[in-house]
Length: 221
Image 1 (tube, one colour):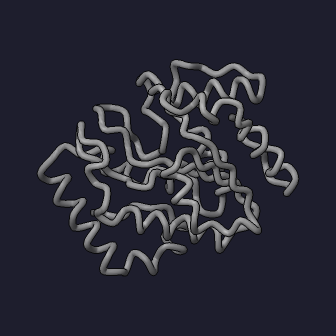
Image 2: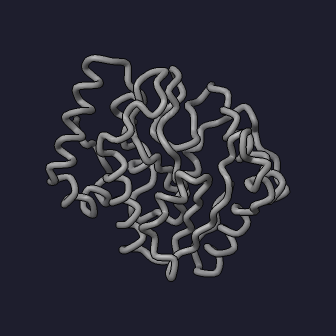
Image 3: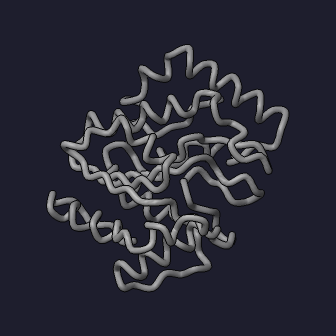
């Protein structure tokens, strides 16, 4: 697997890229792409990193693994490619934004690249998946890599907003230093849990208030 990753990320992650664990992971992923249908397209595995350079990260949203249906995943958590109907969780995210910020969202457009370009790092815990087999690449090494990424952001940057939705994301947040970052937690935006704490969490306005407090650019959600 060719690690085609933006230069500021390549610098801060270079030690991890040299580990035996990462070599095992890349060997596994390369073999999977050669023998099965894997998402996202190889060029988009590190799309979150290439869309949001390390130097530009101001907000982190943590997802689980990529969408496993054709045409959806493109390397940004919760986001889908142009022309693909937003999945239910993303529609619920939009509903909360509308309610929280009194704004109107385009419910037909699920591509969140414009968030990434503003500094919202859209990181899945696992970066690849086999077609129609959710969590099929769990436990192969991606989780350790993304834990390292989250800890690197926490250690080396100040005043980042982390949005942790659902128990899985909350566990991933264990490595975050909460004395110097804002960590906002709620239930997951999935239809099964959104009404139990995601709706009404006001994370988007809280994130912008925090960014403004520290003279950072607010996100146009």
